[in-house]
Amino acid sequence: SQTIHQWPATLVQPVGSPLSLECTVEGTSNPNLYWYRQAAGRGLQLLFYSVGIGQISSEVPQNLSASRPQDRQFILSSKKLLLSDSGFYLCAWSVRRAIYEGYTFGSGTRLTVV
Amino acid sequence: AQSVAQPEDQVNVAEGNPLTVKCTYSVSGNPYLFWYVQYPNRGLQFLLKYITGDNLVKGSYGFEAEFNKSQTSFHLKKPSALVSDSALYFCAVRDRDSGNTPLVFGKGTRLSVIA
Image (cartoon, rainbow over all chains, first blue to last red; front, side, top):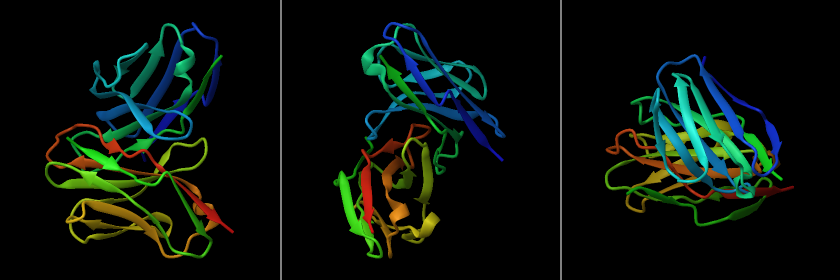
């Protein structure tokens, strides 16, 4: 069966520090991968999505970046965190080309920038 | 363009009463529609989806949703609410002809079931 792993679960980082959040998927190949941010327990903001290794689409230009070094690995990074980067970050995957399928979400990372 | 609206930020219902969480959508063609639930500090969990066929879709935990093409709606329903149903609910849509574009999510509706 397919599983998605996201870590760490919680993170407290000072302003100006770097960030690296990792997401991996097991039990499937060639997934579409997504990074979302959720502020204050409300709506989802799509940050990045990827349909293949090295293929990243950015939805929101800001000081975050994403990379997909391997087929089932998706990394969210920042060189210098801002206070406004605080939030709940969610990784998700879907079956490529199966657009009738929904997403499977990871358990999320709570990031607090202090 | 695709969009989805959840007109209620908050829905309160007494335990045992029926519940409805509203969702309307806009797509150019025909939609794929989804409902997800999120419990505190957790990821979203899939509840149900409409692809084609019967307009009434049954999903997890006793939830169901009715696809209404003329009203472009996909409201989530449950005949008898439980306190454990209290959570944040998201509706999502994708146009069938949109290729591999991401799902569009609504802003979420917080459901509170009161004992």
